[in-house]
Image (cartoon, rainbow, N blue to C red; front, side, top):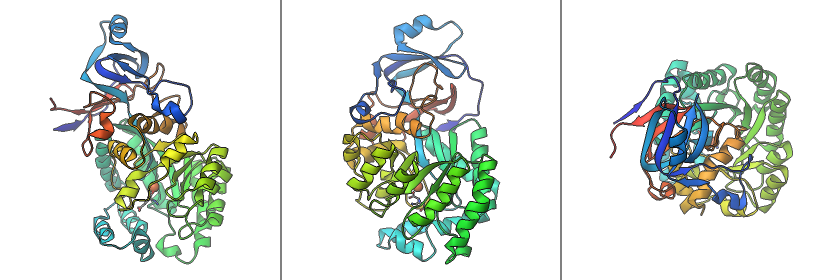
Length: 429
Ligand code: NIG
Ligand code: FE
């Protein structure tokens, strides 16, 4: 039995009896190369939390001595405690599912064929437009429970199933309401350039004008999003069109995180580098030229192996080459109803191990501290260090290497955001 608890006031906490406190302590920047294998794990480590922030990190003996009588004890029961996952690429607000399309795809119809006949993203757009804000909120709360069970405490959340000013704002308002509920943290991204909606088919120029003249200025002015994204593909938004949208977003003060090279080699990655995007995401088709452009421009790669898996493909991104050339790799779920219907970061760690050949430590660094830096929140979240938000998770593991090893389960048994327990598994042994 599980329960998602309502928010309460942050109390002083002492967290101890941890087999490993996986701190991710280190330099105040994203980790690259061999640094990704250094998790700063403390055997029998412990935490002291006050006012929702980490006051002290140390051994159990040190924390026992420093803790006053006023603290509430969180006994981890000999399990690992680590930072909440930061899922840096998701599409968590939508109506309906695409289970029917999934079945068709498994029988041989491609994602591109389904999109070309008006299914895919455009099918979810029709459902999302028809749904009320409250219905979308109810669906998104359900998915939030899935993020929590995997141990995720921050989620980057893209719009992109509205594709009109009103429907995009409706999605972004849902994200603002989710954030205000004080559970998982949501970081909103505007993805108006996800597809050309039905009523603009054959008139991409007119849709781009709407994005540039109305949608981006309004969304930036109302501070409904921090970043802007575009699905850059010759058959969706070609580079020349995406560039116009993304430059308008930059002029309006939005940062960039881009769907790049999912299907087309060295395509969106080059635009991400040219525009100085924070991240280039997917990169399943990126070759040496695109990778070098990302490295030279300081663009972080966000890898989404669950979308490769759920599309039934074997075309995974070249994570090892990226790590070896010093790129600070990030991992995310890409949770969405089409290409990646999972909210589970532990599942992503499993795929990162078996398909991307990343070690458990590399996967965890990519899914916590690097993801936090990709969202420009590295000084607040992503590691367990004094002064940071107390966003931590007790997982049902004795060693962090069990996270990618035991797969297909929800390992989190307690999740804290800002020092408040927001999720607890009630029955476990
Ligand atoms: O990241 N590639 C584009 N966007 C999503 C899929 C969205 C959908 O199919 O609904 C992705 O894979
Ligand atoms: Fe995506």
